[in-house]
Image (cartoon, rainbow, N blue to C red; front, side, top):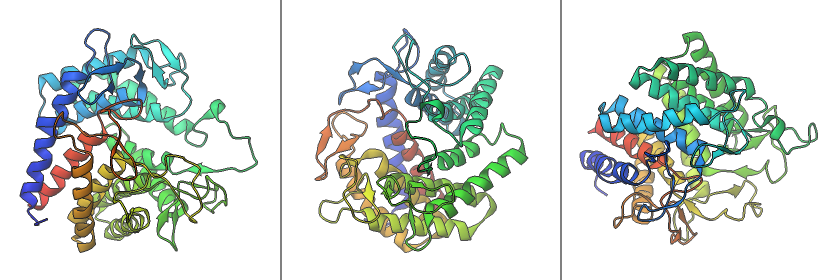
Length: 389
């Protein structure tokens, strides 16, 4: 691949504005009941009408973010509002905790069993409040954010399956999402809260979850950051580790902290070297740090979001450091992702491939895949290459 950064910027821009967004605009908006359909087959036909709070909030965020960053288009704002109104009315229990899933009409299906619904609600309503000027949306965002801060040390609360005290463990997912969420909400938070939370999350991610010797990001560690010799304790989730590193880069560039930026890039490169499938290409979904069989039976699948987050991390790492290794890996990842996930016939990207890179599930959206990773990554890669060209 020639280093034509302008052409790359144009590729991502075109894919976002002329392919991926129209797919969701045309097929996912539930104008009758509110919110969005996310269970869409290859052509965009709805095959299930349940509404999953993560994905509902993520789609509000996506369209609000684009209104804020690109252009305040009435059609985009209307789509964001359609989700925000539905969620404000139906998304929470009486205590303000966000459910996991609802029926099409908004009745609760799955209890608020962890804080990630609250995380994505805070993200969504913060961006929606910023672009719409609706005061009530600010209140929803702050209430959700305060929920996250309150519950972060016990994210599943009464719904946790772990027996208390036997093998205490903390997960990378909590500080990494809190880091990104806090930066997203910068405009709403008092500056002391912002700086305090950002510093604490960066510290925890880069000290407790990063194995300094191996340069790998572990998914679960003991409360003091030490390793636990168990399935969960040995788990490497390459996509999470790489996504966390571009969150860290994003925070570090605010203070021109080149040391932390380069450290994050090192980790991305280490994970890629560890998790790349030399035989078939692409990144494994889950791995065991010691090479034992992982407990996740889907460990060798190739997932859309893992590769998209890698493209973002590599493009951002290259823009911030100019390191050749970022560019070499970017080319490799770009070729694999665009050849295997992008659907030239019906638009958008496939989500799930088998190890050989063949389409495993012929869908564009479901319980976990919605209007988020693909448009966010296309937007961010477009911006990285635009800044470089």
